[in-house]
Amino acid sequence: MHKLKPPEIVVLSFLVAIVLGTILLSLPVARAGEGAFPLIDRVFTATSATCVTGLVVKDTGTFFSPFGKAVILLLFQCGGLGIMTLSMLFAILLGRKLTIKDNLVIQSALDHHKVEGLPRLIAYILLITFGLEAAGALCLFLRWNITENWSIAQTATQAIFHSVSAFCNAGFSLFKGSFMGFRGDPFINITMVALIFLGGIGFVVLMDIPKIRLFKGRGMIFAKITLQSKIALAVSAILIVVGTSLIFLMERGRLMAGMSFGEKAWSALFQSVTARTAGFNTLPIGALSAPVLLVIIALMFIGASPGSTGGGIKTCTFGIIMVAAWSMARGKKNISIFGRTIPKEVFHKVFCVFIAAIIWIFAISVALALSERGHADGFGYSYFLKILFEVTSAFGTVGLSAGITAQLTTVGKALIILTMFVGRIGPLILALMIALNKDVLVYKYPEERVMVS
Image (cartoon, rainbow, N blue to C red; front, side, top):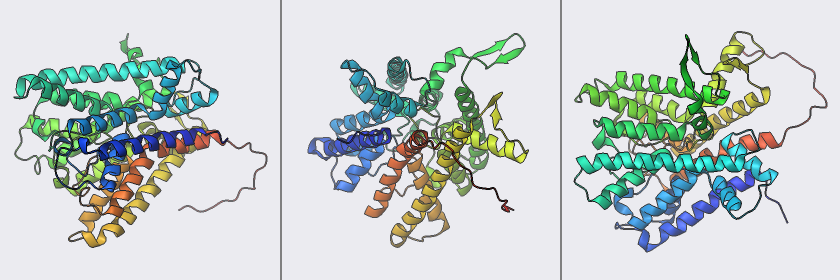
């Protein structure tokens, strides 16, 4: 009997969840709205939820019944935690000890390098996840109970659904315009931004945060946390500041011209944070200028941090690539950051993920442009930019859309489904394959110089 390898376990776990989700969403009880719901749309919705993407072909709030919404919530909750992590938890609860292969799957998924104590790590993950989701739901409930004329049951439903969706970086919303109706509400903005940030920063970083001591004597203490946490926090902070500043400066006199300063600031911050993997919006994405769309594409490509609920190539990958480029430009042989040297095997993994992501996004964008060419009015630069936006959003499991998702052909939807799936598990599978297939160097070919400029 063939024993499944760790990459195969990961793939099968997500495939099983998508198939089960598709079956449940196919039941008549899952729908409240009228209209056709073909198989491709059911698979699309199940994949988007399981891969915590948030791209939709049917309005979640009106088309699906409470049962259908519960199925979608369950799918992105499981997808956020990681199907393989949950399966290992159930194995522990049933009294089965973790094998070395089980440990390898979990530690690779979470980028946690200590094999011992993984059952405790899983318990921490569940405690942190459900604790923060409960806190977020309570904050949203208390606010909406004051500001909105909803029943207690409706308020609780909205609060729980959006809190879980935000922490899992899923981007699914029961509101037709996502969070555009709350762009000027500081309480809602702060709550959602906090949930998205904490869900996308990574579980290892979340466990490191209590160790941070900002000031001790004259200097800042950052030494007690891991290098991964330092890179993830530093890169995330830089991306949030740069993204917020660029969106604010480029849209303040255009799309945000009629807003107050507070609404402009909150909108820019919200869109900068959510663009890296969450998929909610307080601005109409399709109406954004081309330069802002390109900024958001870059943020979506980078994505969240390792071991988090989000996608993308990850903040640590981007940080190491930038540091490596700077080190090479200065003629340094080693890649060092925060007083630590990055091992070559880590850089090799980072480089492979980076290049593979670029190739995939480019190839699928071209394929999608060809498949949609006969179905787009005035196909040109602006439409191709929207296609690139859509593909990057799917690969980064973000869920932001420039408004073309629902109009895609069957082939186009299939390409986006494949991209969501690859974007969610592709970087993990590639990292696992590199880790499991280390070759011992027994010989070396002679070197020869090549011109590169």
